[in-house]
Structures are given as structure tokens and as C-alpha cells.
Image (cartoon, rainbow, N blue to C red; front, top):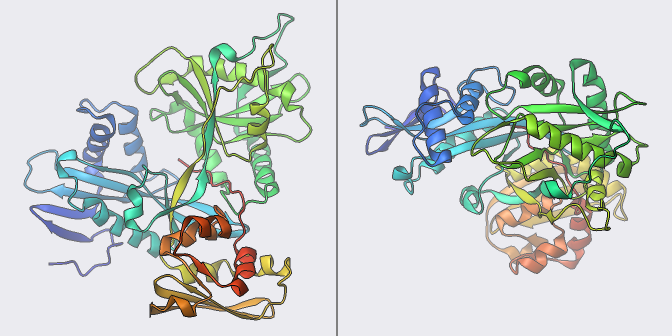
Length: 465
């Protein structure tokens, strides 16, 4: 019998048949959650549970983590088992984005796992129903996942925002220090005294970029990592390092994890430098300092001799552009591999409500275009329902959804439902999407309006955690 409680309620329970029960986690589930996560992600039995991933699960459900609460795992248990009862689980993280300057709350399903013996039985879909319900109760306008290819398209998600690619630097390619004395630039651990400068620099760079979507980072997040990284057993904390020289105690900062991955020393997506610094002077000693830091790091799994640095940055990041142009003595590039960016999966459960929420951005885009002062109606058809936007003198006065709606020929534009999301978030242009999807139909009179409201723009959607 289905529960009368909302799926978002911590007491919600649903029987799935064959002895399987869907519910929210409780404190006594911690070790079972840790066991399952380790077994599935590590592809081997996980006893004893001393792996960094097990500690990560314990920290997430401790009630002290900035991204989630102690009851934010959805799980499926097999009540026929005497032990190892949890057979699937997933948790809900929360982080902010900004759509230009409008704040969004994002619900992030993460650590989604199923015991291989229980796959292809709809358990992930059932757990996502809980996570989506709680996300929406919390006021999230968007859900987003950094997940495996294709899989989450089954659940209403679409690739709609760039996610950092990386540059690879073989250790042998990094130029050695000169023999004339101390390095001109070095790294030190950031402290709470650095927090105002770190926050100001990150925020200035985020604002300067003209991003469609970006990640604001709260003081709570920075402070959490500055005060916890030294005792980290998970490898997931940010180790924030400040760049210094003889003339300045703060040239910028970068972020590394607290553990390296096999033979790779990673630098995460924050690598910010104060204005006015010559990057071609700064970066070679910083690469050497990062390599030295990597030699002191614990190894998360499968230890191996360090053979490369890997720096994760968005395509438009100025540090990435400079790193690509660093060369060795022979003029050859230091970076031997530049990976293409991956992408965020994004889900918007209520498109009309989302468009209403970002009305100030849409009105601002109109006001700076040849369509300033526009009055009229824009009907967007999604092969089953429609969203109508009503404009009056450049103001978006109303957004409404109508369903069912099946006559796409009467609309101003028609999109397969998920295909609109890359346009909405500036990930792809209208021309690019129209070329890729024959079932996108746009009337000539609506083309300029759509291009104005939803231009292709870079984003800096940094994943927290």
C-alpha cells in the first residue's frame, strides 16, 4: 500500500515488491551505505571499511557537511536479507548557481549506486523520484548531475552546461628551476586570514566573465575547507594554496584535493591570479610547486610514481589559455593533452516557473537588443505541452503552461522537450540546435527573439564537492 506521506518526507516508505523497500536513510544506515558505495565504486568487497570513500559517506551523513543533511540518502533495502540489506542508494546535495545575477538553488543527485545483482529493476528511477521530490520541496529550480554518459537522459536530464576539461602536463615536460637560487614563486597553505582575499578574487573573476551560469561560493564553504582539510580522510576536501613571491604574500590561489589519484597530481577548477601578474613568469614555478606538493600527498588508491599533472579548467579560463601557450626550451608546448569539456546533466521540472524566476535576466537581455520594448506573445511548443511568454513594452508580464498541446504548427517555435535546455542555459545556440534536431521548428518572426532571450554564452558552473 503506498504511503500517504510526501516522497520528500523523512518517514516516507514505499514497498517495491520482492521484499524491496524504498525509504530515506537513518543514522543507523551509515555503515551499510558506506559498504555499498565502496563495493560498487571499487568493484570489489569493501571490508574493512577504511577506504576514503567510506569516510566520505560518514562525513556526508554526519550532519555537519555543507552540501547535505544527515537524512538525505534515498535507499532501497532488501528485507529478505539478514545482512548487507542496502542494495541501492543515492544522496541529494544542494548548491547555488546564478543565472547571470539571479540566484538558483540546485539539487544534485550524487553517489548513485546499485548492487549489480539488483540492476535493471527500476531502483534508480524510484530513488530519483524521492530526490526530485525533496529537491523541489526545498525550493530548487533545477536538478543537475555530473554523471556517466547517457544514463540520466532516461530521467528527464539533458547535457546543458559545460563541465571542466583538463590539461595534462607530463612531469618530464615541466621546465626545471634555474640554479640561481630560490624559486620566484611558491605555494603556502591558505589560512583563515586569507579568506577575504580569496573570496574577493574568486568573486571578481566570476563577475568579470560574463557567464550565463556561474557558481557563487559562500563563506561557509571556504571556511569549512580551510578548517577541515588537514584532518581529511576522504580525499574530498579542498586544499587551498596561496601563491606568493618575495614582493607579494598573495598573488592568487589554487585548489588541490587532499589526496592524489594513482600517478596523477590534480589541480581542481579554482586557479585564480590577481590582475597585473605576468602569467608566463608565474606559471612555470607554480607547476613545479604543484608537483612538489603532489609528492607529499597521500594516494587515494593504486599508488604509482607521479608521471603527470592534470589541471581542470573551463575552456574560457584565462589560466587555461596561458597554460596552453607555455613551451619548453625547444618551443614545444608543455601540455601534451587538452581534453574536451564534459557537461552537466540538467533537469528543469517546471519550465514555466523557471522562466518566471529568471524574468529579470530575460528583460535585461531584451533591453540591450534591437527588440527593446518588445510587445507580443512567444509560444514554445514541446510536443505535448506549451509554454506561453507574454511581453508588454519589454516586460515579461506572464509565463503560463498549457497542456495538453499537440499542434506544433500553430506555435512560434517547437522543441523536443529536453533539447530546449542547452538553449536555455547558453550551452548551444539556436542555429546549432536547429542543425542537430530536425524536429526543432522556428518561425522567422520568433528567431531573433529566441536568439536575444537565450544567447550562447560561456558558463562557470563549478561543482562543489
